[in-house]
Image 1 (cartoon, rainbow, N blue to C red):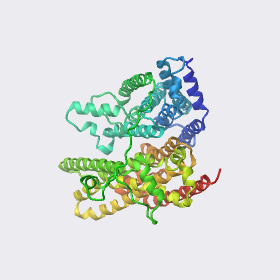
Image 2 (image 1 turned 120 degrees about the vertical axis):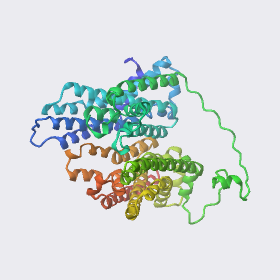
Image 3 (image 1 turned 30 degrees about the vertical axis):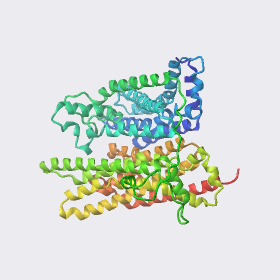
Image 4 (image 1 turned 135 degrees about the vertical axis):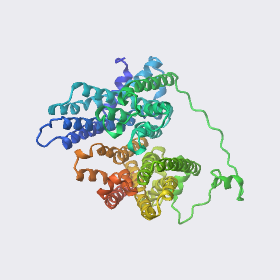
Length: 567
């Protein structure tokens, strides 16, 4: 197997890229910072070995988050990049068998992730110097990290066999991993009132416990922090990490089998599209135009003098920004919002019988969901604003226009912001149903909290859109720009929440500094979360994120000026 030339080519090409060097450096730097922040100043250990275990748990969970963050960058584009370069077909004309080609792509794509985990092993052994830790614990943590690397890598590789574009494959992979890491773990977390134990049926408890066991976060929590409120499991069931091992092996085996089956078949030429016809339509009101508000096949009007041509061009040419897809996305968000309102109403009704109505906690959960959806959808809509035109050759036409660079950037910025605002507003009704359940005495204060939440979400929309444009102007490929946008946004919005696991181990000043750049934490504080009220995050967060957004916007304008110069 190791004589397979594809494995050698994949591993060497991955290690020689700047992306691999940057990710390896970021991984080791993050591990070093975690050790530095947690290590005792006097180098002494406490009697109960609590300090060394706390350092080990922080390192384990931090490295687990980094593995999930870096996995899509190397596996989700493994096969789609071959299709885009038209080199996948040439592999099937070699003397290698189809299963050797498939196995070579699988092992080669996962090679860098395995090396990444192994490079972090010395950091995990550092708490040995403080004592109180056994080698079996470290080996178990390394085993879960290796399983997670292969587990998440195979998910990305499977999606890569289905998709035809690298940026789409990266987007779907990040979406699936967010569901696996966070949504599956939600029944075991305090925000859901430990839903895993609430059903009276043992079957439902088993379903929730199994779903939570599929989350690498839950597996690591139950191993390094078994007494944490984030590792609560169903009574009478095995711990999460013991169930994660066989479940992850089954998922790896299933995804590997599907990848082998799909890659055994040589690629076929895409089916030709049907001939397009120009259909003249009258200007009268039709049932279709009334039903869908916008008829996507209707002839467009001329661009007015006061309109931005780049904005209209983006909405007419980019598939994700066209009217029919925006309406469908808004419809999905509205349906999700209605289901969320029903869930909130049912939860409030059940909890009111027990005499407890946690309006602030439910508002925080809804607000966090809004920001997480924005983090999930935003980079997909903004990662290809500039480099997408460069890849398709449209940028050469835009360079010849009389439009200023600022107008080009502003048009693309508006095209990136408007759909995100529509999707965010579609989730707002879930907050207003909580306003109905709030008491009259606290209703005005809750309404003020909703206004503050809107301010945080609005700033998050501007930041995500500008971040996507920033990387899209600096990088040449849409897939790379989308991956970097996801890396920055997910790191700020989700990875920094890991300090909540050991808030006592960090100083209040450090925790506040981390939360100042986290839109999820600030939105939850604006919604009235009791545990975050003492940090005073709202006003400083808007200033910091506003300054960062303005700086990235100016850099994007300067980069567009540079790209418009003659070759």
